[in-house]
Amino acid sequence: MNNSVKTAATYDFMMRAFDRLMIKGWRKQLWAGVKGPLVLEAGVGTGLNADFYKDDFHITALDNNHSFLGIARRRAEIKKKKADFVSGDIEKLPFASNRFDTALTTFLFCQLEKPQLGMAELNRVLKPGGQLLLLEHVRTYGLLGRLLEIISGPLYKMTGDHIARDTEEITAEAGFVNISAKPLFTRGVKIISAEKKQILSHRDGPVT
Ligand SMILES: C[S@@+](CC[C@H](N)C(=O)[O-])C[C@H]1O[C@@H](n2cnc3c(N)ncnc32)[C@H](O)[C@@H]1O
Image 1 (cartoon, rainbow, N blue to C red):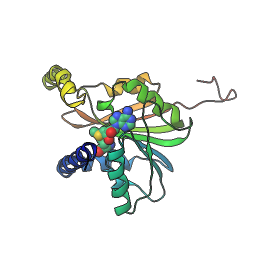
Image 2: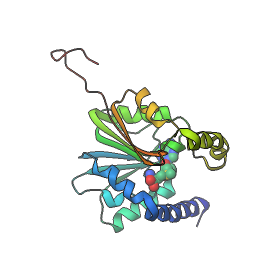
Image 3: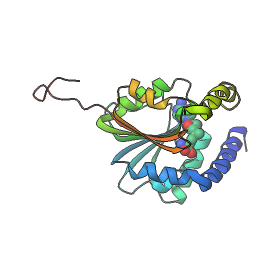
Image 4: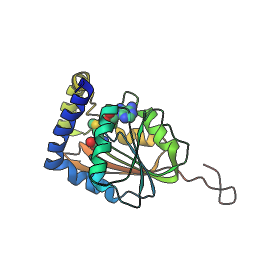
């Protein structure tokens, strides 16, 4: 087993433990809002969302880590879930614009060096009026928020995880509308939902 396969297997083992503790319920809530048929899951990891893939969705599951994708593909096969697994970077998505009905991520934005680029790409590949759904750990406020802010820099250097990112603001900056956020755990984990702006025709009003 090479190092990247070992890392993926260790990650999968740990993440399954967290899933059993609490994350699976959050995943279920997120997927209850998914609208198909064309769904993009970016940063699919080892495929721990596969339980929620519905037969009438056409899922495209993307990750930039081959070993993670390998586990995700096997997990989907075992669970008899259909998805196209694609190797790629969220910051430069290999898809045409205006393609997907829903784009979603779970615990991805905390890992990106340039989250604004990833968010702009999700906006580009969604159809006008298409839906964005994110389950992410995000910046929180109050005493806990200040503490997390202080340790977030060193923690990012150690783990590559940015635990205090303002993903809601990044969503707004990318031009999404109708943004709402549901706090799940000490307000540091949220389900964020938003829509890509509709393009109105000249007869309906100004093009936005
Ligand atoms: C914390 S894991 C979450 C995995 C999965 N979404 C889950 O909930 O279990 C983050 C995933 O994002 C992937 N990732 C990180 N940066 C990426 C990028 N620039 N483009 C695509 N995937 C990326 C990682 O390889 C990893 O699989």
